[in-house]
Amino acid sequence: MATQTQRPAPLPWWRVIVVGRRPKRTLARIGVLVGVCFVVFGFVLRPIRVEGPSMLPTYRSGQIHLLNRLAYRFHEPQRGDVVVVMYTGEHVVLLKRIVGLPGEKVDFEGGRLVVNGRMVEEPYVRNPCDWEMPPIEVGYDEVYVVGDNRSMPLEYHQQGRSKRNKILGKLWL
Image 1: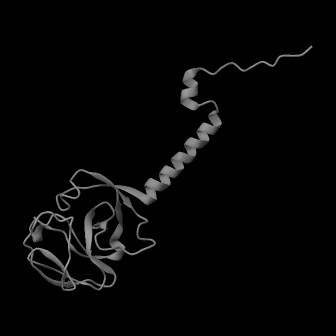
Image 2: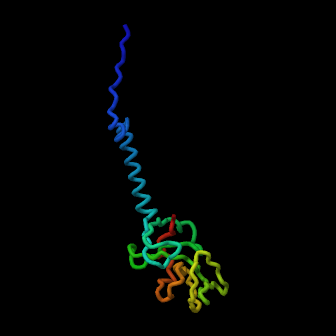
Image 3: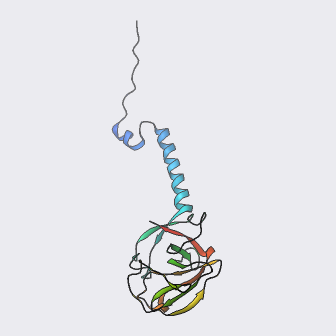
């Protein structure tokens, strides 16, 4: 005489939705996901809120972007990169664009960026300006940063040389 095996009773639908059919596997997946999110958003990608008009029209005030803290671990900053620079501690930072690299001379003539005596084309600058500034030599451990909103008077801009170690990372997304 053959014995019939009993099937376990079906799980209630609400339990399947909340914890799945295998609760131990679901909890392990949740633990791994929380750990990965903690590492990625705690050390690699940091949310940055844009405040102020200095990067208009490229980045508007109130927008949130991600800062890639590992961007410059394997290569040096490039002209045109949008970076986050420490101003006073890690909580007060500036969002700026790199326009001058180490060893270069940067100046503004008639509102146009001039690097090493040559005009630089800047497609991200949409507003004309009348900035005049004598040449400034960028040190070998520095970059020259400035905002995209050139319609603001030069004296209202936080711009200039920044030490390489003050760059927190490159803006991502």
